[in-house]
Image (cartoon, rainbow, N blue to C red):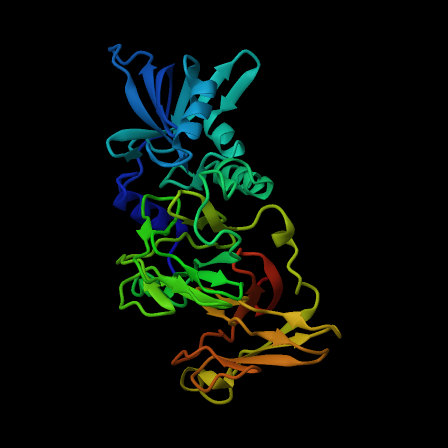
Length: 409
């Protein structure tokens, strides 16, 4: 597991969106003299000794690139909000930059207060939320605005705005394994995005593209498809693709981890060749039905954390048991068990059929069945002194949790 701040620096530095060291914060004022696109404005900055405008990269959002569907709409929104306006430019680090442009939060200064230009574009559904390096102070409000626009099908979240695309009516879902099992820095393939097809016929993804909010689109080649009621897993790292595995090709992790103190997340977005956003997932969930998982209140967790003998040489002496507390079937498909930086996805068929039925998860290696899972760790991962095990959705919403000793849920 890595810290969120370290990931933010690494990921955004790779995109030239931040420098590797924090410098002093900055606050300036000026006038927007031109709008380049939905996330870049030209500002004549007060007191800089020149009338030449500076291209400012708006912090916290990502709009479509010029020529792509939705790009003109995003530009129009930014123009209506910012063009000709007096603005305040702020940054937690004055050195934050992207492709030579200072990264700044741009607020219009009005007679009765300020208007967050980034938030307006996100509210109108014309941008993806994009936590950038050190400029993450408003990330939660930006993610919430994007999730609300998505729920309403506004702007780019309307999946047929760009024209008739392939496989119309396809029932596709996207799920992000943002916290890989173990150290993703050593194994980027521990992070992945699942593209799930819930329909009874295959969906070709030839020419479709998957991205995070960064400029990291993966275009799927001819022959790529998701089989009926199946999953195509897109690993972040490198590998040889097959019918159920694809590879993004990165050498480092792509997704922010969620911790008790760092709640800045991210998302994955699947576009068809026309540029319509056909499936997506963001985390943590901040609004809508994802806040109340169907399994919540219907299962309990228990953990045997002190294995017989030497814990380190007997990982299968440690076991987490998930037990149903209701008479109805409890669907746990794709739910995630998490212990610190270790994660295990339960899989597409995980379920508890009746009250009292269980799924037992052993920390070591062994044969996995419908009711017995193995985490495949070579040694102990449940600390005797204290820890916690959480069962959650892929959108970082808790289903159940148990803790012992110094651990806390």
